Length: 197
Image (cartoon, rainbow, N blue to C red; front, side):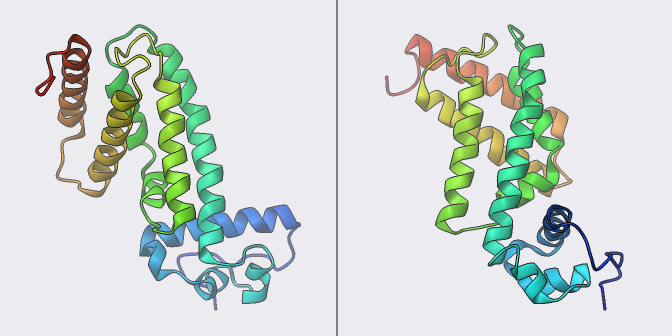
């Protein structure tokens, strides 16, 4: 019997529709229960289909998570482009990207849910793609420095994830503090005045 949280579904769907349905239901389960707590049987039950049906599309929960991340992160980065264009030459770039990431609650939860090597490679790939989009941005003084871009993208990712999982945090205040911190730190590094230089 299907879970009450998920409506019963038609048994016969075109292949691509069924695959998309598996991804959508799996995403909800992973976010609600945590990736580690969801098996292929849980996905099949939530869909109201047999396990072999789910296995005909994906061989494991890791495969489902990988496909979800590939799809969602590609979409996230595509939707980020207009924000980066609009922020060209503006000082609020970091704050804008931070607020954008806060709107991606489920994707952040998925991005922080797995531990396998393939999962970690996808997460690193996302952060590398984010760094590539920030590289050379006129509103960011970090320029081509890969260490600065690594620090900035790691801060954005970690703080956004922490903020969406802790409702007690003030996102607006954190955004302002993060922007000030990044601009001041980048400026100090570029001027060679950072401690230890």
